[in-house]
Structure formats: C-alpha cells, structure tokens
Length: 512
Image 1 (tube, rainbow, N blue to C red):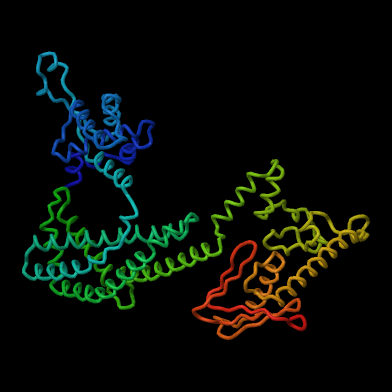
Image 2: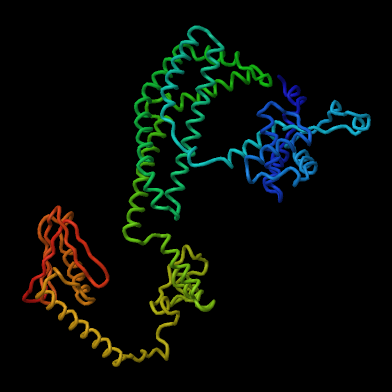
C-alpha cells in the first residue's frame, strides 16, 4: 500500500506531541481519578463492551470500587469533565449515539459515548505495566530453549514442504520468543545491578533469597550451554532448506495490509538476520547473543557472590555504609551551629579553600607567560600552607617558639604509668588464678584482649593448626586448636566464647 493510502487512514498524522500528550493524565493533579476512569473502560473492554455512556462508566466504576478500597465512588467524581479532558488528550474518542434517546428532547440533545483510541489504549496499558511491575517479573526462562529447538525443527520441515502459513506461524513465534528472552534478560540483569549498587540492602531479605537466586542463575546457564550448539545446528538446517523461499513464504502469509510486499519481505529478512545473530553468528570468531548472555550470567553469579560477601561482612562487623551514613547524619543533626556544621562538612569530605592559587613561582621569569596551566610546571607548595593555610616562615622568617607543654606531658606520663601498674596487677592475678571459675574485671579483660591480639598477629597464614603463644606483663597466653570444644570466659561486660580453641594463661619470666 502506498504512503498516500496509509495517510488516508490517519496513521501518520499522529505526531510526537500528540503521542506525548497521551500521558498527561499521569502527571495531572487528579491523576488517581483519571486512572480509575480508564480502568473502568478497560474492565468493560474485557467484557466486550467498547462504547460506554457516562452512566456505563459510573456503573463500571461502582463495580471496581466494591473490590478495591482506593477506587473512588462515581458519585464523588465529575465524570463528564474527566471524560472531556481524556478526549482532549487523545486517550478517548467521543461519538454520538442517538439510539439511546427515549424522547424527542433526548434525541435532539444527543448522547455522547466514549471508547479508547488505539493510541490511548496502548498508553494506558503501558502505564498499567509500569504500575504492576514487580521483582517477580525479573526472571530468566530456561524452559524456552527446548521450545526454540522444536520450533526451528518444525520451521525447517514447513519450509521444505512449502507450507507458507506454517512457516509464518513458526517464524513469528520464534521472533516473539527471542524478544521475550532479551527483554527478560535485560530486566533481570538490571535488577541485579540495582541490587549490587544500592546502599539499603536488607541482609535478612537478601540472605533469605540468595540460594534461590544462585540456583536460578546456575540452572539457566546450564540450559543455555546445553542448548546453544543444538540451536546453532538447527539454524543451519533451516537455512539449508532455502532461506529465500523461507522469507518469501513468511512475507506472503503476512496479513499486515498497510505494508507493501517489498516492505514485508524486507522486514522478515531483517527478523531472520536478527534471529541468526542471536543463535548462530556467521563467523566462528564472532560471539552470538546467546554467548554474551552466558558470559553475563557468569558475571551475574560473581556479582551476587560479591554482594553476599559484602552483606555477610557488614553483619559480622556491624559496620556498613548505611550505618556510617546514619552516624554522619546524626552528627550533622547534633551540631550546635551552622559554622560547626560547615566545619564538620569540610572535615568529612575533605573540602577546603584552594590555598595554592595565589602562590607564584620563586623565579617567575623562568616560566613563559604564554604557557597554559596544562603546559607550565607545577608550583612547589609548603606543607604548612597546605595543612594550615598559613605561609611558612612568618615573623620575619624566624622559627616559631616551641611549646613543650611540660604539665600536659607529665599528666599523660602519670596516666600511662598508672595504666601499666593496673595491667601488671591484672597479669599477676591472671597468672595466679587462671581463667576458669572467675569473672574478669575491666583491667583483666583489657589485658586478655591485648594478649589475644598478639596471638592472632603471630599466627601463620590460614587457619591455626598448631599452638600459638604470646606474652606480656609477665604472663604467657597459649591458644591451642581443639576441634569440637569451646572456651568460655566471663567478664563484667558479658561472656566471650571461643569455639574450637583452648586458652591457657601461665606465668612468664619477661616481656614478649
């Protein structure tokens, strides 16, 4: 059919602006009412009622309101105004139905009936698909590969027998199946990417479903690897039955009346070319889309395992990006003034004034002024200027007075000696009584944790298979692996349990 014939049906008159106006009801103020009005039309369409009067729309809305709490009652809506707005935006089409008139006055006033425009119905279904989308739709179908193989075999047989209608049906089904695979894969891997990039991963939800997710990926990859060579061989068998006859048969049985025979022929040749590139590329060194999908699946398995490791470490350590951001937000909320908030911001994010901009070269004449910043050598900056913002060598280039703060140093030294005495007393108590049948106080707990830290620092790479020893403050701590047993240590702050190892504390002659 020519372009003139197609334009007479108005298919090309619906421009980009008109198509964009179809979604106006989604962003308008009363968008909920518009959505339920269109759902009323959609529900009536499911019951084969296409043309609706205002009373029919109200009746359909009342039926929807009985099963949906968020559906408004028709008496609360100004239906004529809503319907007129949808007609103006091109979502609905209005016509006059005089057969509804019961009197002469009603006949003269005429009755408006409404129905979806084709573009309006497509826009409404697109909005509904977005509103009803969920993670359950993001999955990979591994059962489709057996259907693809069976359809390719049936396509080769139909082309060999010259059955044009069967060729059209099988080829059209293969095209839709591959489009569905590509769409599902895109949604699934996009969902995995969002899951790995998000900062609000709930560990309990992810850990609950991680086994099913990994099993789903592994099963899909196994099926894809098993069927890929067989699908490629099936494509070669189909082409061996004459590709030109295949495309001509599909174009001949195509019922799209607004496409010329040449356009239909070109479209089906393009579809087969895409199908072949997806399943069996022409060259051995070229990757097919199925191969790329297999690589993406392997990469997705690695991403899920990395995310699992991140979530597990966050649960074990108690520190994650979410907890850090929450603490930072609490700090910003608790500061007393705007100046303190700005100082905290500069400290956290490392932002400050560009102190180096006003610094000149020691000998400016050695650097030509025609050079740009990219070409000129860098200016040497002092650490004092970078860290404090002050020029070095102030006060006539004399060194600043050194403030030793003797009183502060004395207080720190006294506190250090008191801590040393406290730990030595705790070490003596541990060496005399051991760890069993006692509750460790603060000093003994600190000493035990320091000794454990030294023991773990001295252990060889990997798991501990031989006893490891560390000593400090006159005591010696030995960590001995004993599978199937555990050591329990009671402190004033709680209970410390070490599975698979035994701890012994004995006197030691000197420092470690």
